[in-house]
Length: 525
Image (cartoon, rainbow, N blue to C red):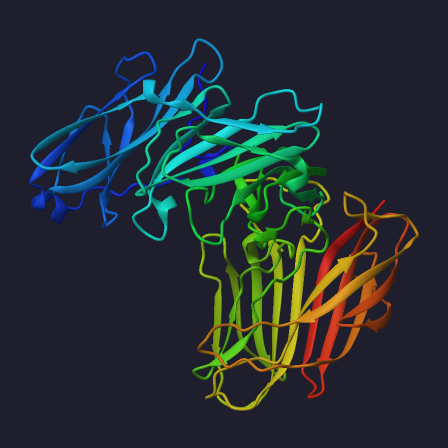
């Protein structure tokens, strides 16, 4: 059988490739020695592999086929590889090995899979876990503060994965093991050198829990490939080892129990034509034993994420990016859009421009000559050529209408305006409210720095108003709003069916006004 190969990753390893740099012209000219690495399989026959060669201590890396001689400057090197052999059934075998070698003259070394020791892991697994764990492992060159940058590895089921012991402190060995049942169980471990008995024993009572809640309706496609990547605070040989959580159509939920540490949740969204059209990397989470956290993807409402207008060099500027995105993910979870941006002063239109961040430069800039009140409007629609959006997709359009005062066109400053985050409560997994019900929408008004070169000032929202529309924005009904702590809560009356649009107006004490509208914010049904 043919299997998808990877270097040190489980399941979707190709998402985070490992790259070995080539030989530079300068190093080739300085080469005064050579190295050939022979790789033998578990039955003693030669096996063709790709060998990563790393210089000590510089970290310069090279890639060469086993059995081929490579010219190198004389010195100390680490040669490492994954010896993968086809099997008559299953996944075959992987044997990970490395040697530290002093290269002078014509040097030859052998990495022999027959010396490999099985990587054995154990877990007091529940009865629904019946298959052996899937393990990804790699050996890393510990010659810098980023050992995972130069590594070699592979993945296999337990019983098919081996590692050749080596006690050198120039090496690290890391692995990720995953057991699958009703829930998943994931353990990572890093060691200095490759142990004589690689592996470990783990207890469920010592694990933390990450829950994934994947809703539907807001995304450009339904298929979600969710995963967890190890992200230790200090880079080591487990960094970016990845465990697939679930690859399925939304909505769904999944639970993963993990060894305590720092983990990066992620999501990749695939269209029907196979294109990766969305997803992203939410905030990294550090979990302690017994601690639980829920990571949401696709909750309504998707809205503008970060960018605000600013004044610089006698111009009003705006980066028209991340205008429709998943707030639970952040700017990496924003979808491409096409938008029309207009700057005006009074009844005079200063500039109008249509932009897109799909293969374009979404930067708007318009010169201004004087102080005064300006209006900047943005009308954004999701835009992704080549795919068909799901029927009834939510958050399909978002608009912004900012009215703000420029005190001095010569001074760089972020405009005193806001972005709104709408979070309807009580929706189901398809982002639907019950017919003829009332939905409480949490509303927050935020703003963020736009970069170190533009002055950012704190601005306080004086009032927040909210409206809803059940007819696509043709008519609007004011919602009852109350201020609760750092947020506002709006009570929205839902129709019998269809979708609800939401609009907010945020003003400050100086009269600056921010109006944001999200069409098809959530569904009713």
